[in-house]
Image (cartoon, rainbow, N blue to C red; front, side, top):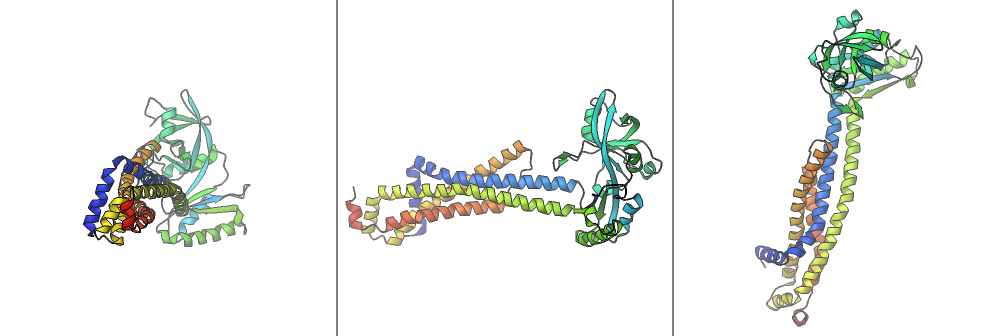
Length: 390
């Protein structure tokens, strides 16, 4: 039997029982749609997290001093000396804490960071209006501030905060800039902050040393070398104690998040694939029913000269066609589900073409595997017994 003729016969058989075929297809459709939707949601979430981490600065190392006491910190000169390390583009020491911010009748507790002018380059933070912190601000202990968009909305709900006065722990500051929105990352808002000159922050927060330094390097390949030099400097500074500091590579976080996201996505896809197996059982069941209903037809065809492989080919093609159509419909439903899920969750809409192709191939494979037994049963029928079947 020619392949085209077998396809036509399989297609006519499918159309002759539309409702039954549709119900059979549902299992595969749901399985494929679930796999694509879940994988796409995982891809979108990973993409969003990577974007948030990248917004904190690229090619970035953060040095955090974890010890206690006045000696367990860095001076400004020690922090800035990191800039002499080959491959380091810029260094930004930071002093951080929390302050009580007040503007008019509005009052809130907000994180504050004392920064230098290099912070803009190192962390890739820029103002949407006004200006950034200047070197002269730190030199002369200027009481100027940059506020985040969330803080601006809370303290100045009906006016432009630029140029307004702001009270931090009772001290008056002038707002010289509003930071562009950076969104949230790792569960905390980057827009609910206030930035002031580092020297001014040391006085405001009564801090006697720097515990956080951001180090920006030029090429990703230099990260390990720079980390080794930093470890040498810090170990010498803290008299051989490696527990007094932590060096964190931003790229390591992205890689870790990617690995965790990929593992979770594959796990979800594996769970969703179980429904594909259930759908395959449905195909086998309906094909067995089809063989029983068409026993006399099989007998007539065999008596007219049809060979075992012709009968087997017809039923195998029918099973593959049902599962293939189910896979295509499942892909369409999965794409739609992924789109609406991304809108509902506020994550980027991301598709995984490789997973779509794999899900479709798996659905067809399921149909072929589970259609093999009914097709073999049909091809083994003897013409005499088939013709006598009532």
